[in-house]
Amino acid sequence: MPVVIASDCINCDMCVPECPNDAISMGAGHYEVASDRCTECIGFYAEPACIKVCPIDCMTMIPAED
Ligand code: SF4
Ligand code: SF4
Image 1 (cartoon, helix red, strand yellow):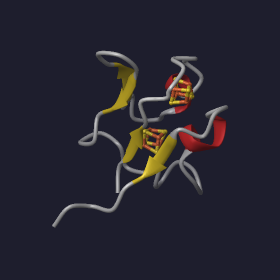
Image 2 (cartoon, rainbow, N blue to C red; image 1 turned 120 degrees about the horizontal axis):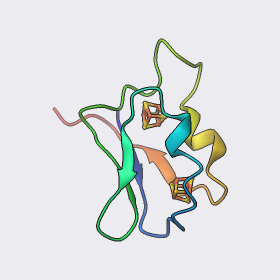
Image 3 (cartoon, protein in one colour; image 1 turned 90 degrees about the horizontal axis):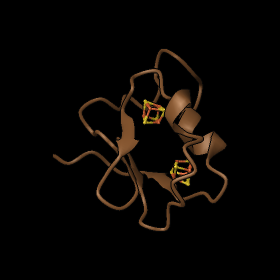
Image 4 (spheres, protein in one colour; image 1 turned 90 degrees about the vertical axis):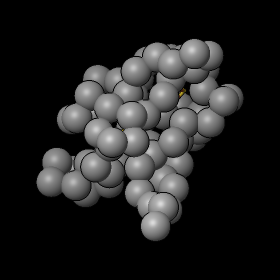
């Protein structure tokens, strides 16, 4: 279940340094999560570090595709 960033992201950059996998970077219009790098922070933190710090709660976990 990678994290996705909604288009209302304000590009504040707060989530980027929190990611232990360097999965977050600036995309075309707002920040994006590389789904192949996001591990939901398993092995690093008890919950996704990026979601915790996002000031506008625009990051969500999506179910894995089968
Ligand atoms: S959940 Fe963790 S690994 Fe995934 S993007 Fe957020 S900080 Fe990075
Ligand atoms: S913390 Fe939230 S608002 Fe800030 S860049 Fe990351 S996703 Fe966007």
